[in-house]
Length: 223
Image (cartoon, rainbow, N blue to C red; front, top):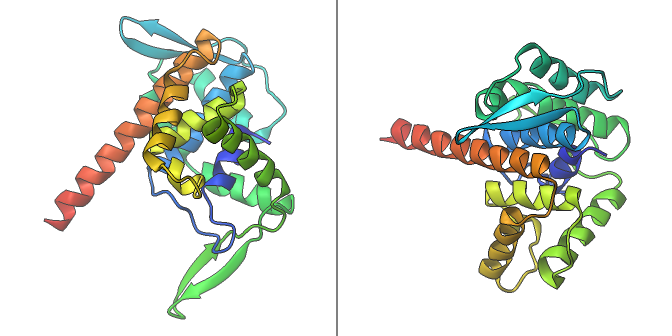
């Protein structure tokens, strides 16, 4: 499973098949997860020019995963760009690609229906939740017990923290403020190699910026 797939499973309700996080933050977080995966695989790096991170291609050869390779090829053709300027394009069609693949693997169920009998809608409830349960168990161990995270779990925590949805994923925590603080501490700590940590930091900034822009646009539209 990709980090993006784990993130998607966490952010879709198993029963209703609906997302617990809004757009475009969720889509940008998925794109960020893909870039983090490529960084972990030593395909990309984030170089720091002053205070600005830029994408650097270390190895443009395909990984063998079509979803990763589509995004890697895009970055190969546009090197030296800031992650926040690329993440919108990298997020296009990504959520649907991931959902469809998870359904094809029998992890999710693609449930077609209509709202008010008129408008088509697709839900993605869980079909086989065993992998998701393993991911949640690792998250709970890290966030509630205090276990040191591995790189992939820490990346998930950082992305969930950027989306401000940790309490929506770990729903039985008594002290939600403490849970969010623990997640932020992990996101800010030196849990990964410098290149990966830089990638996560850039992704957090891009996701946060997306949420702010969406919120501002919504407020303007309602006024």
